[in-house]
Length: 66
Image (cartoon, rainbow, N blue to C red; front, side, top):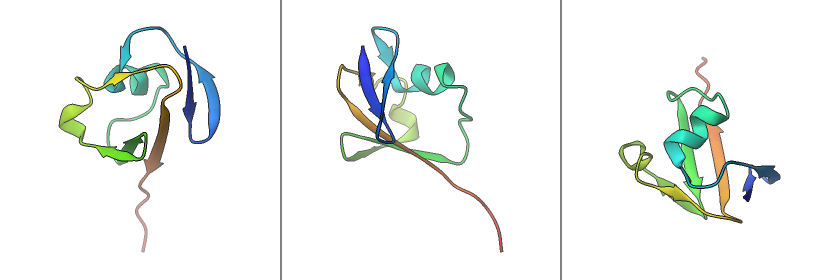
């Protein structure tokens, strides 16, 4: 299945949810926000949010500083 992550085409396993996708990409669960097809997905919904072919996902990393 092909999806777009931050504007790049990526191949991922079939039938995967957002939580599994983040693990597949080895991304930390903390300090990130995820947008799926232009809608923000709440962290509590990551386990139930299925990823479909050609979905567009934006992953934003929060960085502290001062």
